[in-house]
Length: 315
Image 1: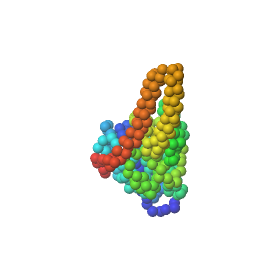
Image 2: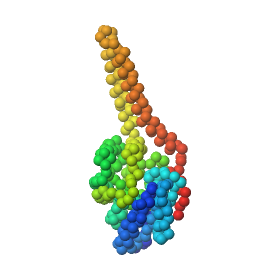
Image 3: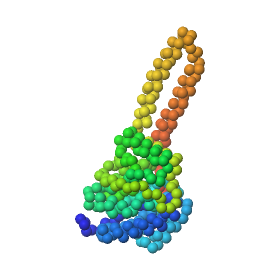
């Protein structure tokens, strides 16, 4: 080992109604932690659960784990604030020299943790992140739109977002502090990882299905999350409005001149054409105003300065 001093590794586990998955996660994590200790004897753990306002028995399960394992800590929210807020709360309360974020449903295999830690501990990386190379078990429609989203984001944004990237990653304390310095309310964590930079090693694995329970990500929630990512890390939609508006104005001017000439020559009754043009123009304006409104809504929420989360209880 390069360093004989004791270091702390914080493991952040966001939970929202994961009462069925938590016991399986803890059992698998404990097995990996034992093997991890044999390979890295100078690393201690804290297991930080973030209960995102669960309505089931998730918090009860976490408290039961804390009673038998002193390494377990938890933060519980006053209501559901969303996964990005839960991740931020975990980073905000983690004490470790190294910090890893992973899901409780075992879709983020704990068995990858030693390899990930090796990359940041002695491999010269600031972060080791995971990405799925397959989407086995996912609905085909969801997989199609997910790939489409990543392609779109990497075309319209200067921030690289890797296709199939998970929130499962390990980071140095310096990188964690950089993330915590970004206090924005509307958070798209995958984009933040890419925006702050730092040297990252990517570890690929095949998709793993949930060990228990059901996914909390409906198609509509994923769509909203994708829209959040586009708005947070790209101004291309605003630029697009300018270009399309200019082209539309040009075409409308040409059409107006042509209609005027035909009307003068009594070839065309212009009323239906004008009414159609007005209706199309009105619809187009509403569409673009909707995009602008989304940006303004985010600006409005940022201006409020609301906290990202409210902790009801912290151990």
